[in-house]
Amino acid sequence: METTMTFEYAPAPESRAIVTIKPKYGHFIGGKFVAGGKHFPTINPATEEVLSQIALAGKADVDAAVKAARKAYTNTWSKMSGKERGKYLYRIARIMQERAREFAVLETLDNGKPIRESRDTDIPLAAAHFFYHAGWADKLEYAGLGTSPKPLGVAGQIIPWNFPLLMLAWKVAPALAAGNTVVLKPAESTPLTALLFAEVCQQAELPAGVVNIVTGDGSTGALIVNHQGIDKIAFTGSTEVGKIIARAVAPTNKSVTLELGGKAANIVFDDAPIDETVEGIVNGIFFNQGHVCCAGSRLLLQENVAEEVLHKLKNRMEKIRVGDPMDKNTDVGAINSKEQLAKIIELAAVGDSEGAERWSPACNLPSKGFWFAPTIFTGVTQAHRIAREEIFGPVLSVLTFRTPAEAIEKANNTPFGLSAGIWSEKGSRTLWASQQLRAGVIWANTFNKFDPTSPFGGYKESGWGREGGRHGLAAYLKGVSHE
Ligand code: NAI
Ligand code: MG
Image 1 (cartoon, helix red, strand yellow):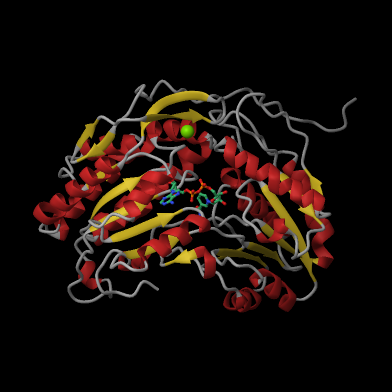
Image 2: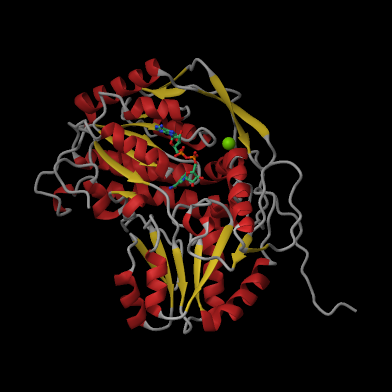
């Protein structure tokens, strides 16, 4: 007789019938879709199915987009009252909610993330960013950013593939609320929800040229960064590209915000509520396949509870469901690209060769597509590359500490400083630790909580400036400090 009981889940697939994917897309410039020249495929990373052919913008396309954005800025958007701008933002937010299921399915197909996350996190938060900033559009003079704050002009925005629509919302909503117009480039592996957003702009009757979307790869991104007709660059992505952008804009008048990598410490003190902590550790590193800049990728356990936490964590990881992202019961979906999978495999192998101990639960990974089982490494030291470099995948490095001071020292021993987590029942300890940690966002007894009202951004190599909240507005207005 079986001694343990397991529940078999029946498949619960989301239908893709709600989305219509065109075989080929152009760019969205001056309120219209215009044909591209060269194209490249975007695929579903869970199946390797080609979803569509995406246009690769070259110089002429980027020029046309910047020109359209400038014209819309000068003739329409900068002249419009904040109240009128706000109406458009509210309209966009409502349409995003109405079409939420369509956005969620499309995001999951193009990105590989579980439908549960695109449906419950990405899309609702993206709409929330538009609602929040719609509210600011006619109240900018009360934001504490000067009595008559002025927009910067045309913003060039380059976003990554881990939260495609959400990163678009983080960039477009504050820019428009503050009176700027934009040229946005989605990541090459996840352009489809940005192209659907272009349709939403048409549906909302947003004046032509206020939002322009050009698709392409790093070469298109570089054309935007170096374009003389652009007043501000907003970038989210790798620290490596962030440094290239910082160098490119240094001799210019462009404003810049950079949201880069992280290697967040998630610190568990011995008085932490262990069961809740285990949930938080799982959410911290396995949410979105670990493709999260603020992921809790370095677990710091106080030595006297390390064994108990690891035991419970492994039990919990046995229950993580990895597989078809379109299944509503899936917890961990596909790795976004072949290149990202290769990077995760390489860094995990370095973990093995440097002497850390690897553990993964048994899981049946699909034969097609890009997959990596949830993994933890124990016996990690600060010198190990897997303790220092961003893996950007479902891989957790576990270190231990004896005293609170040692925890802080280890947590801050990193070139990054985007986020951190603290698990403790003592408020005084939490407040003390949060003041010592050199990180932009610090969560206490929770992890990966996002809210449009809260500024987000990093210290050190994690970036410049803040996005979200009142601080995020400053990054789209003239003459206000970004920090
Ligand atoms: P990436 O930084 O190359 O790509 C991000 C965006 O920048 C994409 O839209 C890309 O087309 C664009 N881009 C690339 N080169 C550019 C250039 N020279 N000038 C202007 N734009 C450029 O990131 P990638 O290669 O996809 O991922 C590599 C690593 O970066 C990941 O393994 C992860 O560690 C980190 N990353 C961090 C993210 C974050 O949210 N902070 C997001 C994506 C990646
Ligand atoms: Mg794709």
